[in-house]
Image 1 (spheres, protein in one colour):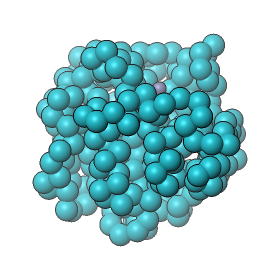
Image 2 (cartoon, protein in one colour):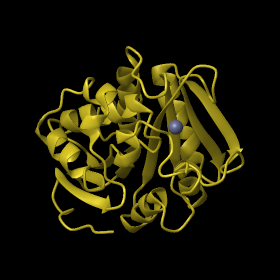
Image 3 (cartoon, helix red, strand yellow):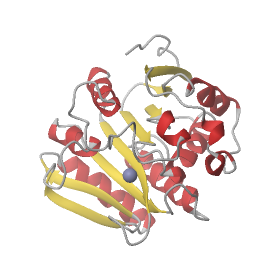
Length: 246
Ligand SMILES: [Zn+2]
């Protein structure tokens, strides 16, 4: 993992060099992007690995992740849009964004990164999500949000925010804020990690870093009309909760 060049705001660095992919090959993704300058830089660095971008400075410091499942496109589209917007905004704090956690999986338009579900292996040494988790700890990130999409009649199959109350009540507070503002459904567990092993959100909460998983509805590998906008709204209210944006 290299963090070279991660000093200034607006800088792009790579946190894994085994995950790269040519995102131009995912037509459903590309057709829904209207990328600005920074997005172009990110798409280019995604060929070599997982890009990380830092915007703003000081506290609080939050991390926003999309593309842990490569075929869940709306949050990956929304992440680039948010990055472009945030660069034009005065922030009170620092936003670290990983718009494409596994560019290879996004290129292939698949949930699986070379056979593994990255949202089940965050505690497994060497996985991309484990690299992200270590980075979160190394950077002393105050909170994490992981953005997904879900098709109807699947799990959860509805626009929602997953959170838990123990050991991090902050997770519930974030979930409550986002769902109240967006009318997404709150899915709250008493204990983090009681449902799955190795989800990025749970592994953060278990380490005392308040985290949520946000879901919008879209067909896998496709972009339902309006779904990137719903994902963007969840992202904006996540930042609003921390007063990073108004
Ligand atoms: Zn997912």
